[in-house]
Structure formats: C-alpha cells, structure tokens
Image 1 (cartoon, one colour):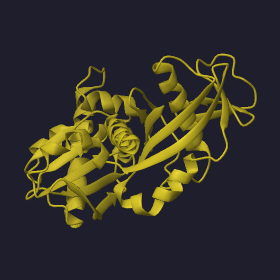
Image 2 (cartoon, one colour; image 1 turned 135 degrees about the horizontal axis):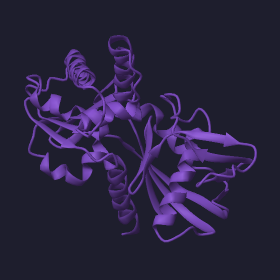
Image 3 (cartoon, helix red, strand yellow; image 1 turned 30 degrees about the vertical axis):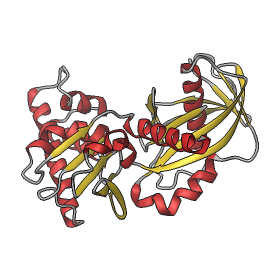
Length: 305
C-alpha cells in the first residue's frame, strides 16, 4: 500500500486527511479520547497544540508517531485496518534542505524491523518497504507540470506555517541549485497580529479569529479589529515579497505559482501587489501529498514495467 504524507511544521497532510502536527503522551489509556495510538509502551493522542518548529524532523520520534497516525487514517479510509500490511511511503522536504536531509529522512522512516502499534484498540503490524523522498513545492505542481513547461523560468513559492520555501523551474524542470528559504510564515504572522491586537485594542484573540477574518468568514470582532488584522496581513505579505527580492527572486519578471494554505490566506494581497506580475495559486493544503503520491506511483510503475 502506498501512502503519501506531507510533514508540515503546523499540520500533517495526507491525500485524504489534514490534522495538526501535535501529540500528547499518556502513561495510561485516556478514557475520553476518540483516537488513541499505543506504541512503544506509551499511549498517544493527537493534540491541537502543534510541535515546536524543527528544521530536522528526525531528531526525535514525534514525527514518526505522527506518521503512524497518518498511516492508520489512510488504511481506514482504504477500507479498514489490516492486522499486517506492507507500506511504501512517499514524503518530502523543503527544496533547500532536500540535498542535505534526503538520505537521513529516508532512513528515519525506513526501519529495518516490522513496526507494531495499536490504533483504537486494533493491533497492526506494518513493514515499511520503501521510502520515496521528493522536493516540496515541486510535488504540488507535478500533476499539472505540463502547463508550466513553456515558461523559461517559474518560481514555486510555498508559504507554510514557519517558513516560505522557493524553488525555480527552468522550462518545467526544477533547478535544485536555486532554492531559497525564509523563516517567515503564517504562524509568525499570527503571533505578531495577536500581540498587536492586545496592545492596540486590549483584546485577546486566537489564530482561529485571524483565519476567519482573512477567509471572509463571519465573526463578532469589532470592525476596527478586523481592519487591523487585514492591514497586518497585507504588510506581512509585502514583507515576504521584499525579502524574496533580496534573495534574487523577482516576481515582476517571472511568473509565480503560490502553494499551500499560507498562500491562500495571502492571495488577495499577492494578486494586487505591484511586485507580482503573474500569479497562479494551488490552494489545496493536500497538494504536496497528492504530488508525492503521483510521483511515487510513477516510480513504482516503472519498476514493475
């Protein structure tokens, strides 16, 4: 069974699921939890409190356990948990870290022994046969890459929770020597806005309030607070574009494809910015996982053929 997983800093995305990259560990089974995974002598539940930012996600077992949750969810979606299964994983890394961390990331998931865990009281034993590692951003546009081949240069810009990652395509092919990464993302922006609203309006808000305002959903927030949120988001988007120009990413002379949930939030400001000449948006938060799946299926098909 092939399972594709996008290990984001703020969320884990598979082809069919999207959940916060947060874990809680328990010494006994929590009685009220809807979803419990037992692994290596501990009980684990998903948490709304995401993990701290990790450039290298292999430094502890957190992302491996989050991966077990993702595998279990996809197995259930495919028809139910099997007591035993052979799994091929398709995963990805930011383009700038791809060359450095690819082998380490692959080995992190490719355990030599079988893996045993219990998901919602059902025992599962899996063997991870192979791990395919792809560059993020490029994976997100892989299913539609043919539409970009006629451009000499296209910048792929993935605005995530903690980072903004850039990859250059030359005639549709990734230039892995031109990768850029900024430590600017939606979580940093949200933290700035929450502080600003507290100082300027003496009000405590959460990330959900900010997302609701930027997505045009109804809230009971005063109009002046909503205006502060919109203005701050616009300024943050401009800050990202200014930083990209400093890194030789000029979107006035090259088309851009913006990827990910962060790009969706910033879309109104990016589309009207004089610093962006032509923009396309891939807004699905699952786009990278869908791309990993497509590329791994192609590789497995070539092997079989």
